[in-house]
Length: 88
Image 1 (tube, helix red, strand yellow):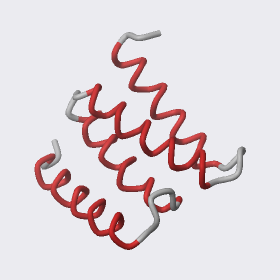
Image 2 (image 1 turned 180 degrees about the vertical axis):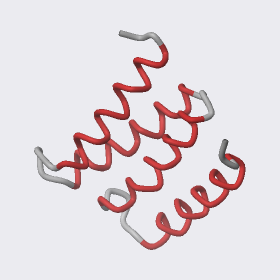
Image 3 (image 1 turned 30 degrees about the vertical axis):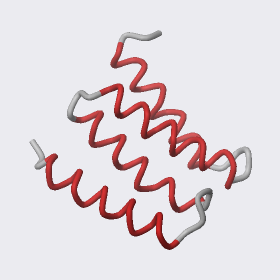
Image 4 (image 1 turned 90 degrees about the vertical axis):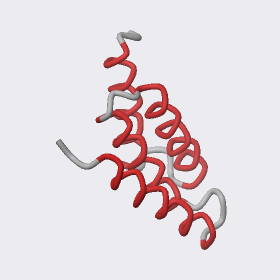
């Protein structure tokens, strides 16, 4: 088991710093949201995970080409959370 408290702390710090240095829809801003989603998914906090994955997806859909591999990763993460929630 990982140290989720530290993982959340560092990922939130990443989001704060990245958010201050990049425009709101810069593709790189999606990374900390995606990591936060992964952490919450590991903690079985699926609603929070889904929210972070959706935020990551929203940024990526605006910033990246339609068939970019990062979009596929985000769609997969969103689908996985729905599966874990039994929402299928």
